[in-house]
Image 1 (cartoon, helix red, strand yellow):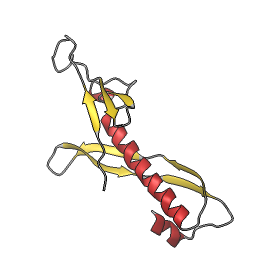
Image 2 (cartoon, one colour; image 1 turned 180 degrees about the horizontal axis):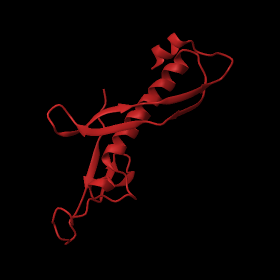
Image 3 (cartoon, rainbow, N blue to C red; image 1 turned 120 degrees about the vertical axis):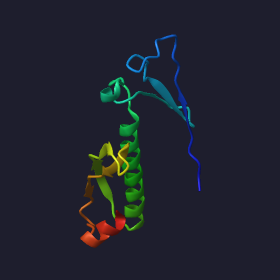
Image 4 (cartoon, rainbow, N blue to C red; image 1 turned 135 degrees about the horizontal axis):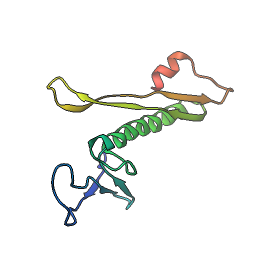
Length: 127
């Protein structure tokens, strides 16, 4: 198996630390050195110009599903010309009344090379 790491960096930088005043801005640094400016979602006092963790989570799940789907489709001899997913994640109260990402709906739209089109059973297997 493999490990995947990220470093989260935040600093108060001398600002007030009241709940409504501290900065939610931070940086996520991945193993390859890529830095992503991040913050809370605007509805949680974050910076709309940065990526919030819930959106990043939805994007990661969608990306992982796409990459797996492309690998499986290729293995089965299908040629994918285009893949687009308008994924939606839901931050809502769970069974314990706590806020949580309770579900993510993936909505992939896939265009195949018309020379070999998958059957509905093929699509079910690939997803």
